[in-house]
Length: 252
Image 1: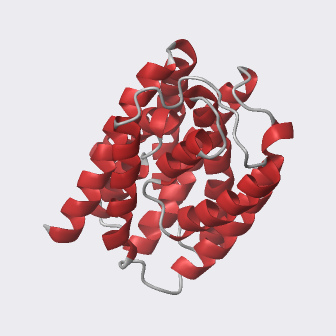
Image 2: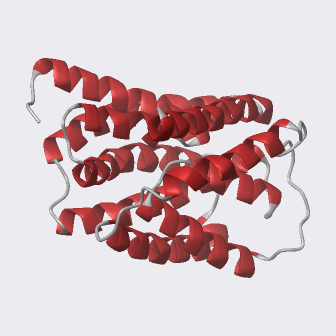
């Protein structure tokens, strides 16, 4: 990949947009990975570089959400540990095998998330009492979604958010905050594995990362400022866009 002023501007702008979207509803990868591929990076280099730039955005929004009390380490430490384990396994495996088969299944899962959220207008408006304990929820969700994020990635934020709302009973604001700390965990673990494997283009990741910081700050500010209704609408838009992007890439 040739680094020019134009490519630097494209990468920085892409990072900003992805950081903004990802901090609110996840799905930033559907913006950044195609851009990295279009700039000439092979798939594994694109995935590794994407993890580097994503870490900048996820740590920015995670820090802001933590300071505003949208999640606490006391409540999420178990999820962080199991997400770390899942992401480690997934990232090691993706460097060994082809993940194309997932492209056909993921749109169906995302469509279920979209329809469930669309048809449940009060979903995530307030905290709910649920029967599942964090000692069960976080190990299962952490392993599965951490593995998925390390192995493939698109839609991870959406899956985390809907799981935290439906299965764990959080409102959308708290679910969004908790989602970001899990995203950061899987991002940093995957990045370390990709760095060890030599599959990260540092200059590209750092340029996009600078845009990610600004975009994540702006997006997390909107989550903190607005109601859960705003997050729900944005969430639906991002999930729909993710479904469309995956289907278009796979079949057209």
